[in-house]
Length: 324
Image 1 (tube, helix red, strand yellow):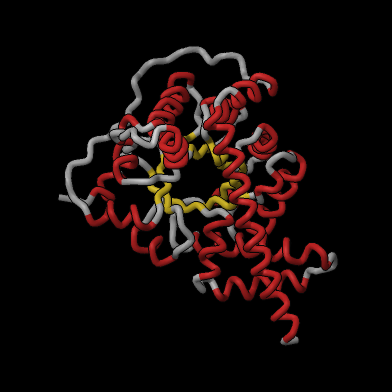
Image 2 (image 1 turned 90 degrees about the vertical axis):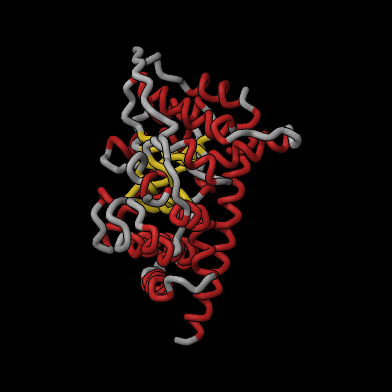
């Protein structure tokens, strides 16, 4: 009998949630996704030495604004890693706009275009890149413009139906609901409660979002993310995409058994409602304590890792300058 991973690939597009090239090559996902936390982890582990050196040297060669050298180096490094990962996957790579820009549409647009320019400079076709943006109101509006310009986007840190709906109404290519982080919040509220995988609030959220998109004819793809256990993944077999870390990919690859898709189109169809405006979006998000708290926490966490990455890059830049 084939492994659970092989069976899962028949029902959902499997995406690697890692920068570990060895894991990507071993499990052969269709796409891959990164964020500042994964970029930092890869650099600290000594991966991508050639890309690190090339990115730093590129930044030093283009430091007409020395104050921006670290920022430029981090952007170039994230893209260089993405370009290398694309050698190991046939599909797309998601590269993230820094979380500090999450509430600034204009700055998000500018950074997304810079990242796309870096990919073009490295010879990567635009259709192989997804620009990853936090699903704030400002981020969603930036993504709306990028999509109109032909730049595909992955809206991340999705915790609520309001975020998902606003993304679909903006014409976003893909969204990433965070299954495990939703479960984390509910476990803190009710530590004594046990959930069967299909009953987990994060799993239910993904199912409801995908069915809402199907029912109303939105082409936006749903990619379940942030998994805590194998049961969550198996319960979401049939979701458009699932982005999975190396440990759970190994569990899937090493186990056999019959996998039955838990998420299928229910066939129901309905007219689309009037789009959410900013006031209704913010009100609905505000009324969801879990989503409000986890979105803010996620942005702070990604920003903290971006700062740690910048500090590490700055240290490497100093060392490189000292040798010249």
